[in-house]
Amino acid sequence: MENVLHFAELDSTNTYLKDNFATLADKTVVMADIQTAGRGRFHRQWISQRGGLYFSILLKPTQTDFAANLTQLMALSVCRAVEELGAKPTIKWPNDVQLSGKKLCGILSEAVAAENGLSCVVLGAGVNVAQDNLNYVGQPAISLREAGIFIDKEILLSSILNYFWQGYNKVIESGFSSLREEYIKRFPYLGKEIAIKNGAVDCAGVLKDISPRGTLLLSSHSGLEEILIGDLIV
Image (cartoon, rainbow, N blue to C red; front, side, top):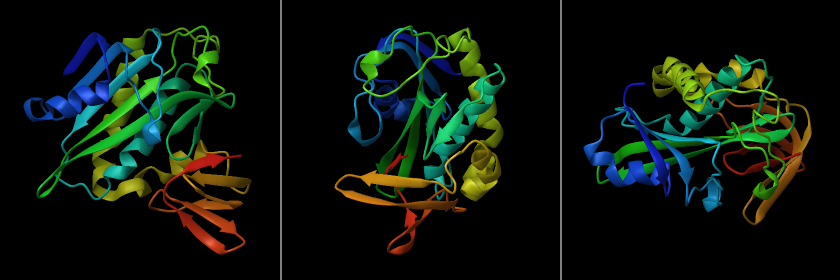
């Protein structure tokens, strides 16, 4: 694969790209067999056991209005790659990929700011590929191997990137609307009672829709609320 830097071990693939973005080309991909300081959303620890696929992409888009939707594009790209292997993954908003109701993939997007705007976006993902025991994760999780699917990590990465680049320019130009239909097909929570946890602020209600911006539209006791960020709890 072109433009992929493969390391046996890094503290974090996201951190590597953030530290070196000025000297690396747009669309550089970094993968590591092990991460010693992997992290997820809200600064949560991401334990990166050998056997998983851990990678990040350096993106330097000229238009950044819809950069936040790139995580949703990555979630959809992982789903499509896994579907090729015969599985039926789902998406848990905004960007977790699940299999049999358990976490298969987590995604983290980080921006590097500049004086005149945004220097770059670093988009990282961790996919459980060949781990045999994920009990240490602290939440229900599953690997492809545990689901009876055996795949080389680099082959899987190539497939994910292929789908990601197919949708990248469309998302940069028009945002979530370019992938909304396919995202919703893999999103099983519409019409269900859910809760949203966002730090100290919790809300609950019936999930009515996903907006063209990629946000949740929740019908609660306060009326129709637009949820921009948080953890979806069923």
